[in-house]
Length: 572
Image 1 (cartoon, rainbow, N blue to C red):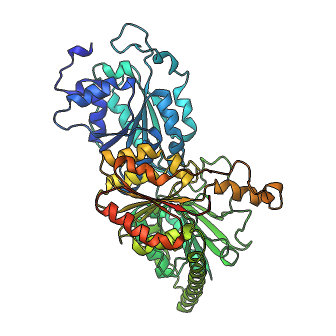
Image 2: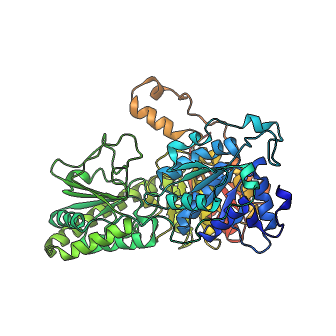
Image 3: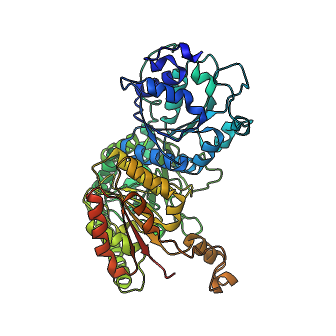
């Protein structure tokens, strides 16, 4: 059957028609880890002599590929496709797929499906693994974490299925989708698409009602000390700019706990850092903006008289099985449209007395000054300590990185204030899903989208190992993506240790010299791995050594050479 297809037309194959439609809908890159199911994909790509199809980036691990797609989307706003090998490739992709789901990143994950026929088709089973890799319900592997999953069927126009996958992924709240592709169907002639219309990806984003926006504006205008707790509102430049304007014009402080993108510049007069808990008791109006987990209820919460507004494309966070937060007003709306409506409603509402605005500004200035003093005290102490910590790494990096550098952080440091980023798109971090291994791939995807930009990874040694470091360094070499990777190496699962102490502060584990299942010793010389691709590696043993080591690492990256700094943050 396949031998009769025109060899100069990739679209004659169903596989080629699928890829061609991706390109028509704006997909530029496919991050792929291939397998025996890819035969029709490989053939279609080989027939593409006119550059009609998306560019395939070969990634030697699926978890890394999904992280790359995540970072690429968050820098460009363009959906990326990941293709992997049947069930096993899907399983490898799952951890970072969870991250994408919790972060509303519209990745289209495609996996081959083991041939269902044993004989009778040129693409029937012809390898022993084709029996072992078949599943009763392949989509069930990922169904908990995708908006939609589907298996391509005989006789369907594959271009229509691609349209549906992309549109669902790009509709608010955005998120990943999953498509399985039987090898026999991809090898068959393409079924013509019924309609050839092109429209913007996804359905029209939800708009907040004028009534709800007016109600929210009235609450904020009447408040003595309002507070904004921001989340993913900085995903777009326009969202960043609108929040900046809103905070400045109406003197509303902005806190951004567990920041994943920068929502407001660190030097903005209304930026109060990443810990809202100290401010919640005094805030009489709280706007939660695109943040599913704005505070920890066991630590602090709003006072009983505070009015709480949750504004998001999904203000109930419906994909979280249990979540109970105070709310006087729930507003459904896409971030940019919601901020525009709220800003307009605030300008149209009753004039806020200038004295009240001045009082807020003075109070926030005091909070910012206290934060600065606290950070200065920490830096002064760590500079003289035996080992560095994340605050020292972020502080020193902030002194030397390029003004437009992008920092991708995964447990490399906790307080964004020590880095003090100031521009939109200068910071990325993983979602709440807890899937380690985002930073390395996220940085590669961001670098691929911005090849001339300085990209820096800050991660713990656990995140480095989970991020598939050998595939990561391979991609740096293959795609010419030099990044600086700074490993905060405390030779332990620090989060596990902290969690144990929080639950059992006086327990046996707290008194143990070697807390069970938390040690990562003996610690490898991580800085040597990058040498396998000709990169620059250095171990940093004392805080005083870090500034010069950073200078050497950044010099290497600026010369086109990947670099790794293994910074010891605890004795081995």
